[in-house]
Amino acid sequence: MRIDEYDEAIALTEKLKETLPMTVRAGKQFLKVLKEQGEKIDPDREYTIDYVGYSGDEGGIMCTIAVDPNQPNNKERHFVSITHLKIDPNHPLASEVQAYQRQRIRKLMLQNQGGFAAEVMILEPGKKKNRGKGFGK
Image (cartoon, rainbow, N blue to C red):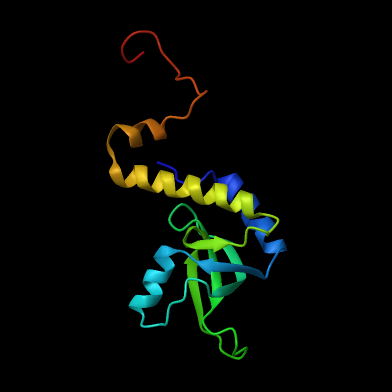
């Protein structure tokens, strides 16, 4: 099952690149990772994205964030999926990013559940099957 619509994800990635740097906050999953790494977590802390790229269905739209933005010489970065970040609601692409996040999270959940719902997601509406005549013809 495809997670992202490739062309849409690439187009959004290119739009995001044009608006860099951009301010975000950590989502629940990113906060959890930071805590596991022993960093002080603050849900209200703002991070600055300085790079955006598309890594395919496996990772989606990925971002790099400076570990300590107060030290410009520090090259250490967090590499995180945009689905684990909260974008500033005043950002011009906020609604597009949030729509991408909702769609990606929903499809990942369906994929992890498996079953009938995941199978239905595989079928693409509007495409007709090429039906032959009879069995195997």
